Length: 329
Ligand code: NDP
Figure (cartoon, rainbow, N blue to C red):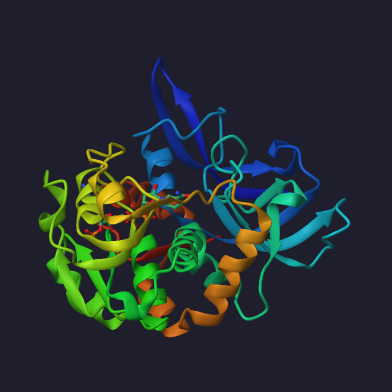
């Protein structure tokens, strides 16, 4: 009764941890006013860090990881949701301090849920996932700050990853000339099929660079951080803007203020976890109106709960293409 499969991360020894596929029941869930039968989750970079223990993402032990999920409401004490409603959750500390989406069920605060748009299946909602929703937040941020196709190309770093693939596709659909920066030359055709006009070798950006360089792009979406972000800023055109959301290369930002004070460049910080509901609504509106379903298919692969441990290693090693949907059977 009420049993479901789940990935559980537990402490092992002084500093170690183990992640295993197990069976849990309703009584193992945490507090919340809505219980959801999870049909799909996804693997995000942060989930990879949690599964491998490479960074302190897990704050409560033991914990079901998974920072997002889509599913159907099973029981609700929240007036906004009733059994049978299809819902999505992104962030809010789920998969960090509260049991997350790598399980057959989740119990959460209704305030954290948004209705799944009618135009998306649960699987498509998770093909977008937190990475795709974050890409949309980035695209909105640079658009709100004046980036437009007529002003010049947009660069996307970490382009073959989850945030990157979605950003490439969205920006191309909005009419931007998209320069996709990748370390994987083998993904050039894939990125062009998503709408990239040209490929920039990751190595051009990942090493220490000059405070200011040739003005190459009007704006961009950076999921990589470190020297890459510093070089992206240094090569942004006068008055341009860059949205920064990630740290795949590193958390540091070895930059100077030159792009800001000599070219009026803006650096826009993006957080998806605690983003207010209005921002989320705008992001999903952009995604449902502009993200091609064909592109979504191209960028996503599907795995099961039992595949997550290997998939977690792969995403941290930078081997994952696009988005990984986790189907909960
Ligand atoms: P992915 O692993 O799918 O993509 C990251 C990409 O970065 C890789 O595919 C690779 O792209 C590139 N990359 C990997 N390692 C390096 C490196 N050492 N140097 C330069 N480039 C590298 O992750 P996601 O797209 O899911 O997430 C990307 C980043 O965004 C992560 O840091 C994640 O934590 C962050 N993020 C932040 C959110 C927020 O709320 N701020 C929400 C979601 C994600 P390629 O092979 O094309 O070079």
